[in-house]
Structure formats: C-alpha cells, structure tokens
Amino acid sequence: MRSKGANMARGFQTLSCKSAKFLRTSRDASRLGLLSFRNLHITSKGRQAASAAAAAAEATVVEWTPLTTEAGRRAIGVWLLGSGGVIFSMVILGGVTRLTKSGLSMTEWKPTEIKPPMNEAEWEIEFEKYKAFPEFYKLNPDMTLDKFKPIFWFEYSHRLLGRAIGVLFAVPAAYFAYRGYINRALAPRLAALFVAGGAQGAIGWWMVKSGLEDVPTGDDGITRVSPYRLATHLTSAFALYTTIVWTGLSVLKRVPTELAEKELQGVMRMRAFSKPLAALIGVTAVSGAFVAGMKAGHHYNSFPLMDGQVVPEGYLEMTPVYRNFFENIATVQFDHRVLASSTFVSSWAFWMLSRGVVLPPQARLGCNLLVAATSGQFALGIITLLNAVPVHLGAAHQAGALTVFTVTLYLMHALRLRSPAAAKRIMAQLSQGAKTRRSAPASGTPLSTPQPSLT
Image (tube, rainbow, N blue to C red):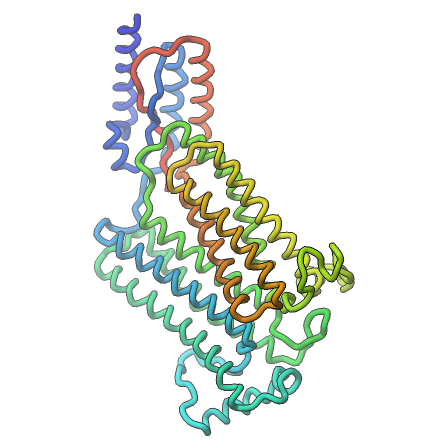
C-alpha cells in the first residue's frame, strides 16, 4: 500500500507540473521567481486539498516582471540607493538649516542662479534684503553681517545640494535609458521621481515664503515659517526618499527562491502587524515635523512629566480645537511623546512576536534592526529634549527618524508578497490538508506545491 501511495503521489506531482507549466523542478521555480514548499506529503485524502491549492496558485500567480535588464540591474540599483543616500543627507542638512535659524536668510528663489555673494558689496546687498523681513527686525535686530554670513551659507548649501541631486539623478537615468537597461515597468517611476524632486524645491520655497510674511503663528504669536508648510516639506521629502529607496531595493533584491511552509506562515503573520506599525512610525515622523515647526522641543524640557504634569496645562486652549494639534506647543509636544512612546513599545511587541515564528533571514534581520533603531531613536529623543535641542542633537534626532524609516522600508520589503490573496488561499488549503493528515497517517513522497511569488 505504501508503494502504491507513493506512485500515486508521484503521478499527481507530474500531472500538476504539466498542467501548471511553471511547476518544473526547484531550480526552474527559482528562475521564475516562484517559491516551493518543502516537506509536504500527499496522502490519498489530502490529494484534493493539494490539487485545489495548485489550481489557486496557477490562477492567481503574478508573472515576475524585472524592472531592468540583467546587465544593468546592479548599476541601477546602486545608483538609486546612492541617490537615496544623497536625499538622506539633504534632509539632515535641512534640519541643521532649521536648527541654526538659517532657512530665511535667502529671501529670493532663483532656480537657475547658483552664484553666491563674491565680494563685500554683494554680501551687503544680501544682508539688506534680509533686514527687510520680520525675522530680522522682530527676532534678530542685533545681527551683524559677520553673523549673517554663516546662516546664509547653510541655506545656500541646502539649495545647492537640492539642485545637485537633480543632476545626479537625471544624468545617470539618461545614460541607463540610452544603454537600454531600463525596462518599461521602471521608466514611469523614474520620471515621477524626477518630477517630484523638482516639486520638492518649489514646496521648499513655498515654505520659506511663509516665514517672510509678518503673520504671527501658533499659541505664542511668534512670526515663523508655517508649521503646516514645514510639515508638508518634510513629509514630501520622506515620501521621495521612501519611493527611491523602495525602487532601489526592488531592483536589487528579487524574491527568495524558496520558502518553507512555516516561513511563509511567519511572513504572512508578521505582514499583518508590520503595516499598522509602519503607519504608526509614519504618523510619529509627521508629528515630529510639527514639533520642529513650532520649536516645541525648547519647552517642557523634562521627562516623563511635562512641568510636573502628565498632561500639560493649556492642552486644548486654542480655538477651533483642531489648531491645538498643529499650533499649540503643549499639545504638539505631548502628542509626539505619546506617539514616540507607542512606537517604542509597539516595536518591542513586534520583535517579541517575531521570535515566535519562522522567518527568512532578511525578514529576521529587519525585525532585529527595527527594534534597535526605534529604541535608539526613543532614547536620543529624550536626551535631545532634556538638553533643549542643541543643534548637534537635533540633527542627530532627525537623522534617527529617517534611519527608523529606512529600516522599516527594509523590513516591509523583506516581507513583501507578489500575491497576498493567493498566499492566503494556499495557506487555507494547507491548513485543511493538515487537518486531513491528522486524521490519517501520511504516506508518499514529498511534493513541491506552487506558492505565490513575491515582488
């Protein structure tokens, strides 16, 4: 009977491979970017469930579409991730520009002009322009030309780096397109990234322009850059960084060749929790942008209490109420504390959950890196607050936020599935098959069953 069962299982495997075309050997599946379950045994009672799983996978499998040619894959992937690294530097330099109060030192936007002041007369002209706006005559009336020059150079460097990013992106893109390395699936994404990069410069000027207007902002009535526009500028920078890094990872990191049944179960379980955690991290980052915009870190420099209270006075004193969440210093900082603490606790809960499942090496690494990054960022945030946000700690905290974001992208990428719906159906079929196997002793030979691809 055992021999007969084995022969029937082998026959079923052969039939499945012929009917599903993409099911050959494990090596063939690897070339097509498919995954195969290992150590699955088909019994006479489990044959129907396995057949249904194969049919579901065949009906829903998404064919792998490479973004680049094989010849250009590595070069394009490195270029995209390198561009992401330059954007990372741009975000940090923008943070330093904000922390040194340099953002309003250049009062005009001339996208085609990159020449800085070259002599004392030109410096005097720039300084006189700065004097005409409220940041000087309301906040810095004692500023001299010698003090103006350093803040001008910070803002000038920030703008110049932004233009350099455009060149560093456009020139290699044109070269890769000329060599035919870029496939049709990637071209629209690269075009969108280029347009978004240009739009980011326009958003930056839109933000700066708000600070040149004599309009009090927030509950303290200080004239400053609009916190709404600052948050828009920072959020769009994060979105641009996210897109380019994700695209680079997609070019370089193709789907794993195989996942065992328990690995797929682990991936699907962690995917379900990774998405809300990623959303929480994103909301916390946006909240931090409003803390920066309101300079809220210079207030309530104690932890965990805020001036001796859990909820500070004046938490919802502004009207209409919604303004408190964006313009009230007490509310903005308290909300950021709650979100940051929630992210810290959630990342540890996520990590502990990951310890109880089987995961591929890259996904396991992502879980470990995420809990380390969020813990470091949480501790750095407290230290920065207690020291009233000195420039070096404030810049490090902004870099830490983008680091947490980067690790989150890596983790989400490691947990990706090309067809999550097909994976769920197959897991349901396997669960049914497991119940069947528990009701009868397993026999036969191992069978490679199709699994949805990852992208």
